[in-house]
Length: 100
Image 1 (tube, helix red, strand yellow):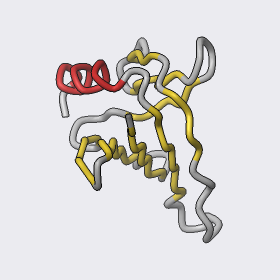
Image 2: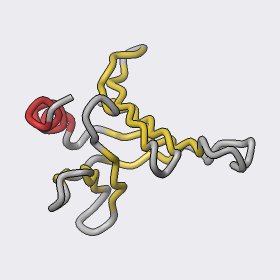
Image 3: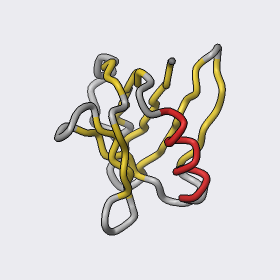
């Protein structure tokens, strides 16, 4: 997904609730996933180097999601808009469901 399409989608999701799930895909990862965290999307911005998008919960706390080409996308699933991103270097899978 290119940055223009990503920016267009995220602009429409500001003030929605995010359900954030980050799964560790490393071979030595713990078998249980981290708990899902619910936070509002207060704002978003691309990082200076352009490899991540910061999804802010408030004016200073955020989660940085990798946005490498072909590693990020949106789907609609049961009334939620879901952002999925795969960080191959960090061996992490991000799944962020946006609900209004």
